[in-house]
Length: 75
Image (cartoon, rainbow, N blue to C red):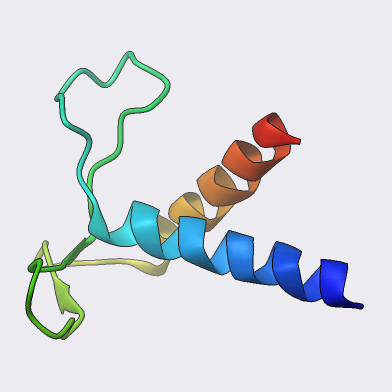
């Protein structure tokens, strides 16, 4: 059971990272490209403010799917 909780915690952490962290580059062709959906200001409490006016559920689920793929690649 603790392995399941560790996997869930790892998935949650990767999902949050993808939602709130931009890639250091802007090259969409690279595998590690990521464009944050929510703004996260380092050093301040996270308020979950959308980076775009029209944030959609598709944008969120795309990040979740990418988080799952990233963790599968690590295993």
